Image (tube, rainbow, N blue to C red; front, side, top):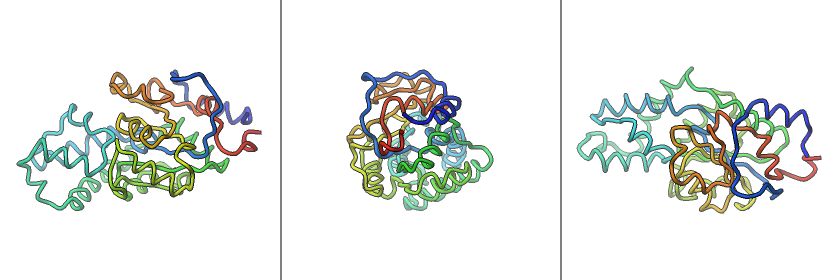
Length: 258
């Protein structure tokens, strides 16, 4: 078991009700992969506002329904969906790289001073780093946004491996970004645990043959797909308790739990 003071500090940072799809066991996990937005960082409100203003300037009405449909998508999938829904927007005439750059620029400008890490998830990431457990970010955001926002919330050093969906062939719900993160960590996929807040991300984790903890935002909790996860945290990342995860799985080398 991990030291009692570490378990206590993690529990103090969380506190959400947890639903497990199977009886608690001690399956071995050797690495933890984190989605970024809505999982590590409370960034969805900032993304929503920056995207709404940015896309509005190109004649695209980015409403609440469309925003919900985009949660968890990579940048290419994001713009492809917009092309289908708003085929007449002049935005689509720009190269994909330029569209992505403009979107990222608008977000980072708005996000500065407005985003923060979820306390329980941040505490868990810092504990994994302290114990030497391999951890990675696997996100639909661009590499620049991943690095910049982790730097903003003081967690960049916790994630030496960071993978963007723009670096792989397919974004979530395909497993590519998680498989690439596992490859860079040199850990077999079946020995990885994923923390995710979106349905596409959970589907991607399952397709990668990885264990998964779902952190659905309260607005998304009723959606089909979260039951695919091994564990569901009611209230999402704001109520995540790393101590519960450490009770469900044996994480890292055995001597780290002595």
